Image (cartoon, rainbow, N blue to C red; front, side, top):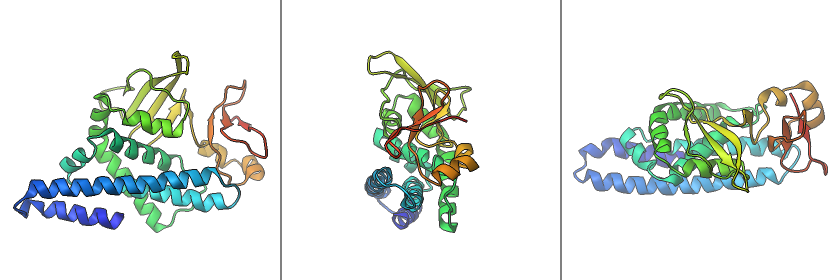
Length: 254
């Protein structure tokens, strides 16, 4: 998919020299939308597979998930900012880009990235930096793509109050109030569109903070197991696993 993106980027760069530029750009955008959807489908498949396995196989699959999410993000990197803005002009595109950014940010710290993975990571960091104002404007205009992206990570999330910037006009952090199943305000959510950090009431979701993953006691008990977590409602505990570990829910505090 990276190769296709590079070729389309080259085509778009040459399109000012093409007589029918508008038609060329339209067809290129259609192709890239197909690339986004296909790559995103693979990301979701890897995520589902990761949630259904245990043990040493998790490490390799988590690395594959990280790389595939990075590749999916990179399919938006076509060089021409005007064309990229066209690509992002749909809730589906915002959903894909933000969800993959969260996946990349929350990948386990123990993953050993090869040179290619590191290049993908740096490329995506640069892409999000370039697009931060475009994405921010789309979110402020009311795109539901951000809600769908968060719901992929936190299934209990129900759209509440409209997303708004958390800070000055150039802030990359956005916040919203999630609603419970009864329609009452539940939690305050924060998302950094530049770094992909997602917080619920100030705590990370989906993955444990790196300071816990790297703790010697934690590693002696759980090794490099990849845990799906949410903020815990148990007194004195900060995180709770979404699924069972050896038949039990596990709660963790820092």
